[in-house]
Image (cartoon, rainbow, N blue to C red; front, side, top):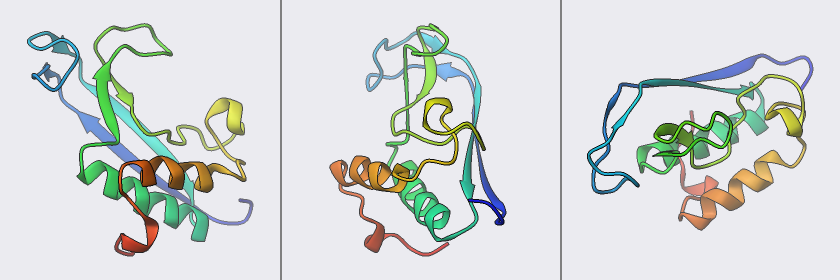
Length: 120
């Protein structure tokens, strides 16, 4: 997405105790910060709209074992996001021509559809 700006999303979670909804109730989890990067164009705007709806429904993150760090009780992505500006699919970055299609499919599984989300 050359020639356009970047929409950056910052998620900040305080530490806490896992509830009954988590895999290890009563066990602590550490604070975490997660960043998402999306092109400031129609594709990126559509992504952010879907992610915002998923976040508001509590579907965007989970507490559980991290596939990347091995930490048992970490704040993890429950819906795939773009955590790098560059590097392509293998580095969770851009370019990724089919990301919006895959994100739309993940969100649709949870009942979230782009045409039902408010504009940014």
